[in-house]
Length: 354
Image (tube, helix red, strand yellow):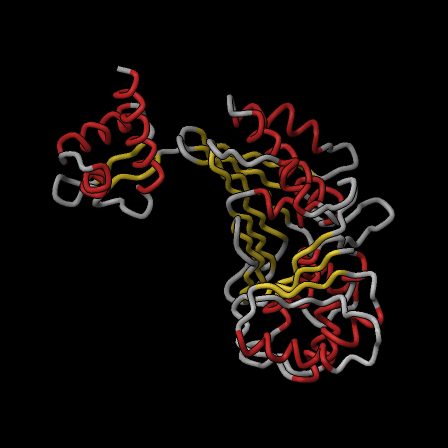
């Protein structure tokens, strides 16, 4: 009897996890996956609709299913010196999340309070909107302010080229417009804890999905302010402390490791060929002990770019462990060529392995 119940729970969880991609054929999709009849799979779908975990729309022929919001709430907060993120979390947001595993609540507490604090202290706006939507599978929280816009503010504070350059710097971590009061770790770690993390601000966007590299786009947007979305599976086994440990070494007490998406240094279809591009890519990485240069989706690099990154920089910063990852054979050849030209007698800190 226990095994039958466990199998039923597995089938229903599978349905919840896949209904968004298969709204019109989820019954057949589940039946094929578990090698059961369509009638048996339909019973599990009907049970989920009766439990209000799924919504049913349309007639028999065109019926589709969607995850039903168990909780949906929107609240507006006026920005002021008296507004405190921990109080908002304790009195409002955490109550909406309800009973969830402690590791899930730990992630939400960190991510929400960091993003709410950023909006409250740095946006220069007048209000913050918090939207919470919880289904049987996931929870999504949006934090929206009507301030100057995060990318625009970073661009101005650091005298950067444009909003895209701001996204590149943001992806590295340890970036803050108020170093006296903030470490610049909040967005970096929050973006890596959630299944998906998204910032939209005045036409530019920054996205990170768990286990992948960041992406940037310059289409659409909002006219004013910053819109942040965080989404997490209610049943994830992910732990906040494990994410922290992934970017620390030694005693694990300091944030000393980062991953830099090299593709963010590219503009449009241009190639990475110049020393100025390389210097832009490497700006502020001396703040870390270990730097992973992620070449995912980068097809090639030029000689000057490679020389600056893999010969000049390591000679000037021998204490930094600079490691390229996710590179193709052509890029590997350029890296090895640059390293072979080193004039230093010491071993280069950049390493390439098969």
